[in-house]
Length: 302
Image 1: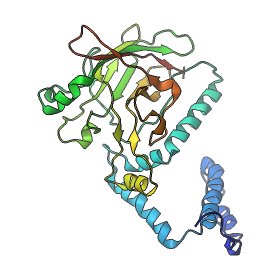
Image 2 (image 1 turned 45 degrees about the vertical axis):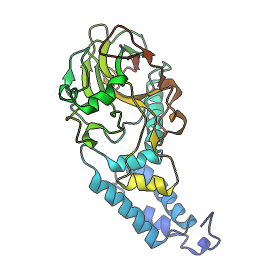
Image 3 (image 1 turned 180 degrees about the vertical axis):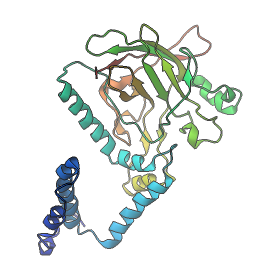
Image 4 (image 1 turned 120 degrees about the horizontal axis):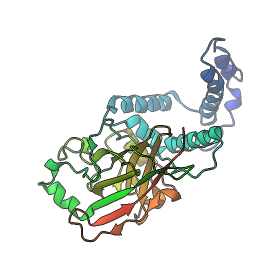
């Protein structure tokens, strides 16, 4: 149906108040603050659309299926939040709250969503190393990746002073040119296209990686089916994920996006920000890379 039912005034007008009033006096303070708002929105939604038991159960099963699919290598529930724009919205809210709490007006590198394919404890590699696993370099997969070999470097700096931050950790991961992260692809070695790098005393990091490519989000789960039902495009524009950490500074979770990608304007998870668009340049006199990018990260003080 479209719009609000003319008959939903017949529903129990006091039901939601009774549910809210059931919260005990010793409830968690934050839950006591937010649950009444959530319950009112949730119940109003159900009444407005005349939600049926069958529709409600379909939603419950979608969440259940996402939970069953989720592992430490893939978070399908998070992917559903992504395509609904919820993670990007919460990321924006959290960033604004942090800046408000510090009273800082300094420009920092904007955050972006973590995404469902992050893996903790990627290998710690020496500055100037490649995140392409050695065992992948004599395979057909590498032949397809070779035209995208890229050199990525820059500095990690303080947003307030712009001074370099020594020993900052730059955690990087991205999908392969076939659109798959290594945990999705049996032809890629474990932890391929993932790595952590420790910046030097001048805050510099240097990484050999790939120029990213666009890819569709996975369709083998409820998130993909939901996109189909909504007649929405599935593509994520070409991007690279980063988590940057340093003592005395806030953790930055972000992505950078290739400005030339055709899907910049229709990201399936709504994560693109103008400040995170980058331009790769042709790299010369380096047999390990055909492209290059210089990018500095600005971290807020904790």
